[in-house]
Image: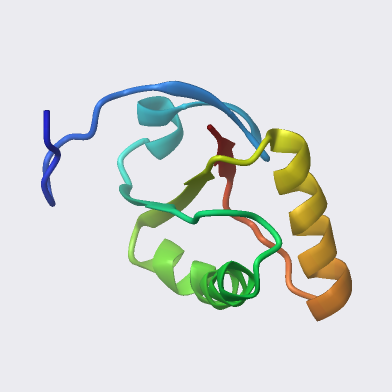
Amino acid sequence: MSVRINDVAPDFTAQSTAGEIRFHEWLGDSYGIVFSHPRDFTPVCTSEFIALSRAAERFAELNCALLAVSVDSLYAHLAWVRAIRDAFGVTVSFPIVED
């Protein structure tokens, strides 16, 4: 099954940095961008998360929610979010789903 832009994505339930998420319920009537990154704590992924975190309010104004996913554990995600906050003063406000 392939999902294309403007298709309704399949519903799922997953653990995230914001607790358990049931995708359709979490998304509500917003549009969503689900994006993946290969690993936590990598320089490129960290810079991308900083940029997306700084732009999160603009996405929200467009009724668009951000959701990240990677292969790392919830514990790694939580540690990485904390490290980004401590090192760069940036709060990652969107959930990161563990895979």
